[in-house]
Length: 425
Ligand code: AMP
Image (cartoon, rainbow, N blue to C red; front, top):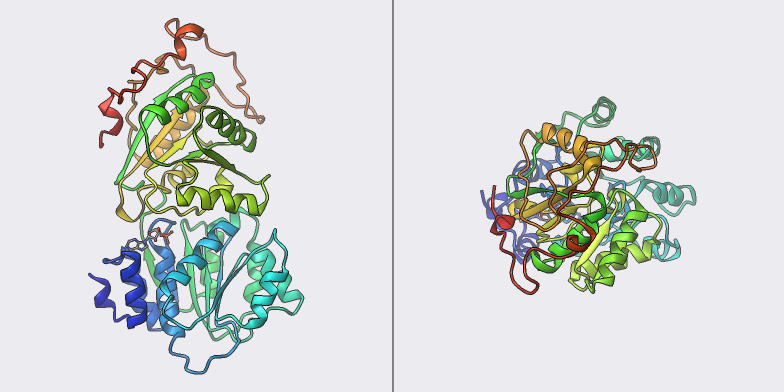
């Protein structure tokens, strides 16, 4: 199927073409005709499947039929994080570039005056996080009385982040007669119940279940002692990879430490996490997207929904205790069919998580040994609640003494010998 088969109006077709999209993703193929027909929709899909365009395109087309412009909010997209909200609004802006519709994004953590002024000027499509939206509703700045379309995005994350109560309060304020589109990567029973209670005879589409990692992602594991991880990261960034890299860190402190070390090695790096202001996070994200910063180090929460076109590398500095997190993390690369690479650093503390992750994704992740910090002697350890090793540190393997461990096995300045690094599965 091609986008031209979807009966899109000219201004949208043109904007999509400018985005470089030619073929709709599987969820878009199913959602666009049904949503255009006014049906409710339940999409079981995670970020990376093209789900934003799957709802944004038909919403734009449906709303563009309204002949008389007015200031009413006609579509509301509720999403759990600021980063996701900003990205959704950016996508709507791009797809609706040639339409006279106005879109706006609102989220907390920043002054409300700018968002309030924009709302007063009139908004057709509002993208919002739950807290700021409820604030504005309580202040009488937002009214949802004339809403025609409601999208609940990342419903399972809303639950994880404790927003379900807020979401239910918002749903109570919506008109009964409306079109509802519901998206969630997973369907725990509470989310299923919520979907059942707000959807009216929906079309259901499930794509890429959470346990399947995109086939286009070349996944690898590096066995490395905990204390060598920073050196290994510096080494591969200097010798093996010339592209941008998104690095995941378990902790905010860890993210800062990684960023400091890379900066000291003259690798342009920024860190984003919950202790940084919204502006600092957005600036760091913009710098990374534009290529000004080569490496972005992020915690899982800060990285939620980060959408970077053509991101080729994700590094897991540690593996998460929650195996599904691995799938979400590496899903930042290899998007919409593009090729991607994920590299996971595994020390003794990560061994159990590696086992669980491999069980979840149903495959063994190949181990890359051809690097100067490889060790075959990892000793399984458990993390205590402070992320510290609970067992004694294993002895360092003899060949990696203080003198030799920092010396790369590949000659400085030369391209890496380990072709296997870029090997496809
Ligand atoms: P999403 O799942 O909405 O986060 O989208 C993932 C990425 O795929 C985004 O970078 C989109 O710009 C991109 N994308 C969405 N639909 C298409 C398409 N039909 N063709 C190519 N890229 C797409």
